[in-house]
Amino acid sequence: MNLDKMKHQHVDILEKISFLRTLSQSGVSSNAQQIAAAIVSMSAIIKTHLSAEDQFLYPQIEQDGNSKLRQVSTQFQREMADIVGEYDAFSRRWNIASKLMGNDEAFRRDANTVLRKVFERMQRENKDFYPLVERM
Image (cartoon, rainbow, N blue to C red; front, side, top):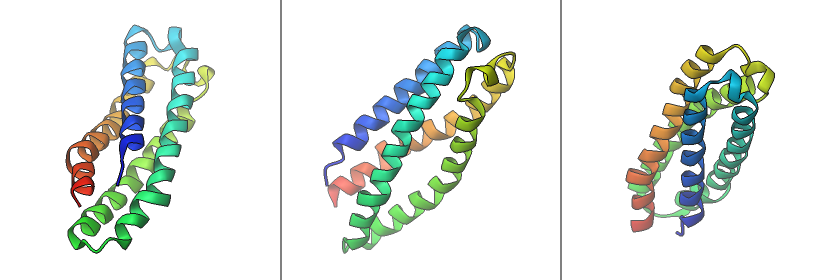
């Protein structure tokens, strides 16, 4: 299975997270417009990525005869449900500049919690899941 597009999406998402960190450190309120735009952009990439996983990756793994791969895939799917819910709430909370204005610390706390989970999940996919998929 070719995972190049999904890996590239991971790179794009990680770049957005890094960009958000830089903007946040420079001042949430003073960068509210750029932060909101980056969240909207990142959300679009994440939705596309999750859709590809749900429509192509996971169904293909289910059809594969490898029980270990199916077991790992099922675990990753279950874990992702919570992260998706948290990210969705995060993105709706902070996707408009006016919501960010005057809420620098609240945004930073929320971003540190939610985006760390997204970051760590993608690292696990890159390190543990995708190589297993490619080997099988």
